[in-house]
Image (cartoon, rainbow, N blue to C red; front, side):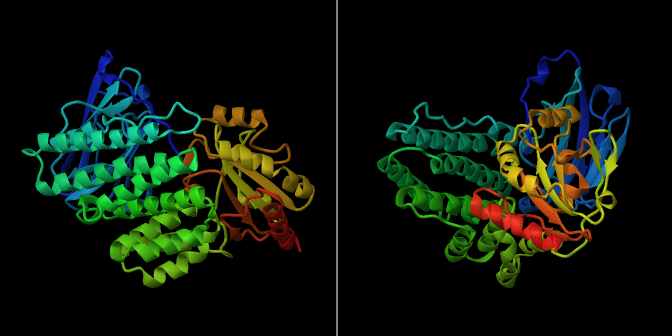
Length: 474
């Protein structure tokens, strides 16, 4: 999970431009007259030809660009359109993959402090996407309990943004092909509604207001059937994500209105029942990829999903999850730095059951897990169990500050961090961890027991985790 700041880079005294040219299936990069001391040492760029693979960083589509005077390199694009992702701790003004095509030039600016951003003078395709980022945010209610007026304000904001989107696309009609406009329209329209669904699904109010919001939600869903982002998207993964979020919020409304509790099985079955073909495959895949970060149950559905899936990209993503989370397989090798600067690897923990939690400073869920783990750690820390607490902050001082708060880790934990790599540490990438906290268990032989251990929230789940550890010690 990432934090970005928006700044007006054009007010800086020193502006340096980097030309990024996409031609003949390659992305070419060059920075003129620039020294690496002015910014981070490198930028990570990778292409994702399908939006569903937006979180995947593999050697085949990833390039690390070392910043230095006159440095040049090429990154294979491989097809006419692709998403380009630029990652750097000082890169600003981007919060989503950028749609690019062969022949584009993309300009990056680097100011006097070393901050990197997209500059002025972009191609019309890039410029249009930057315009979309200026759409209004949804208004937050100032009331403890939302009112009918609050719900109406959300709908007004949605309608304004869709009208503004249409105006932006009309202004670029002479510069973008119909296919490009439909591609951008589908992604933008779905994004507008996804943000609205998030607000509607978290409304705190009386039942009559929740029912009013639910009616609005259902009408928007009905109106979207057969539209550009339901049928005409060139990247159907976003359709899958839209349908996944739609069903999640539908179940949230039913839980609020009727007291119905739902588990992963309900969500999985509802998506299967209400969608077909590639939309079903993509929505189920998004469902598994999202929920597997928080619960162990989606792991049990990997095989059943592969039985009906025909979409090749969906199958690839599910197979990757199955491979990375295979029980009984030797754990992926790791090297984490401890507070004394020593590298800690699996060989240092031989013969021990290892319970590994992953957290970052400022994560409320991580603090909650830290508190819930106290009784479990107290029971086992003196035996053959190591509690390895892995921090994923990029900055070492943030990690140390987090330890010193005493709310994330235990005095009995072995505290380590990902050596400044954050979520891009090879160990985390291998196990597809993208949100936190996470809890993993490794047996005394260094083999994986689970990548998503039961989190001890409540007596029943705490006893379940304790039993798992006790069985591994026998």
